[in-house]
Image (cartoon, rainbow, N blue to C red):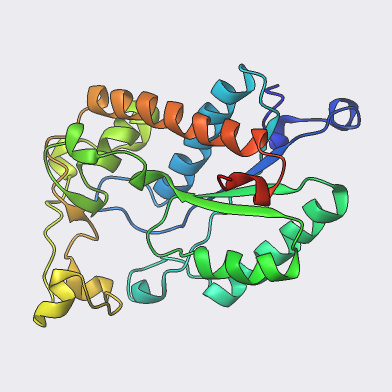
Length: 255
């Protein structure tokens, strides 16, 4: 059993163990083009968190990875069969309960490791910071940690070359053969402000993409996924270590 994975731990071990940081992987359950599983975001968040925690643990960092939350905000995907949605208010309620337990038990640091673009934890953690002033609450979108252009040829943000490469490396048995891959063509918004990115409106997924993917996965390889995964988890391990080494949230700011 890995001592930094809560789901693999027993009370025999935990009753004598105290951690400095909890990591909560958070994904979504949704279609990922024609060839990746609905669990892609959950698998990515779990496996990235586990490897980063392993690297940090081996350097003396006492971090524990909580079970991943498999449901995300998918309000724009109601018309995609079995894409499951929880609202931001539901996420806040779940986080409130988890933070309340951690705070009560003296585990004062939590990192939400986000794997889904529809999740936005910043406003939720702002509110929870007021309710639990003694907690250090943080979130990170792992897919923004590195410059993806250094690893992949085709840009995208859903079941694209990057995600397909990761799954080819991490879970190749869950990726369908290449002849089944969709092209991931995105239909752009006709209002230029939204297409340019400085204005926002929710994407209606069934209108934006014909195969539920956004980004061409055709150049994906397991080798690209492995290189990206190794560099990514090393960088996230550094974040875990840094969060454990500060005395408190106030101690993060330079004097």
